[in-house]
Image (tube, rainbow, N blue to C red; front, side, top):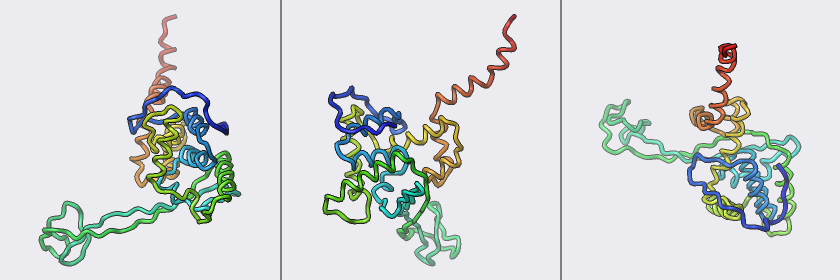
Length: 238
């Protein structure tokens, strides 16, 4: 990927992106970065597109989570889940439990308890993205913020930023998940290991990762074409 700088002088043709299963191509990410007017926006887009992190993970990333020497990121994800409990004995319940499996009492209304889950994974990051992040961190020293966050803004502000850059680049309705899908679909297209992709993306279930494999129909068609090539060559009339 090139490291474009500056603004795009002409207004590009608008490409609508409505389907959440759609994905960008590398050239579109280049266009997005080219439209960014400051190092922060360039680093933010590159991080999402080239590492596949979620936007919520990107805005929680701290400078201490980046190891520039080893080229790795430590991604910490905090997720809040609801847990159902028996109002009589406090035992955990499933959503379909009408009777407590421990005390046997009928459960008319289960207690709902909020539990925060903390997941951590370490992922590699490429040199181009690290260079853009480094340029951004040096650039922002002129501003008063000196906190630990790499991108000190809200999730909503991140969405707005991506949509704004998308409009400038001629990509209408750009969703942050399209950037995450770029890494996944590129990985699958190159025939790389799906289990490793699961680790990289931080999916709890391999079934979620397999959606990217199933969605790459062009690759599926290409691989199917190779399946019978040898046999068809042998059966050609001479």
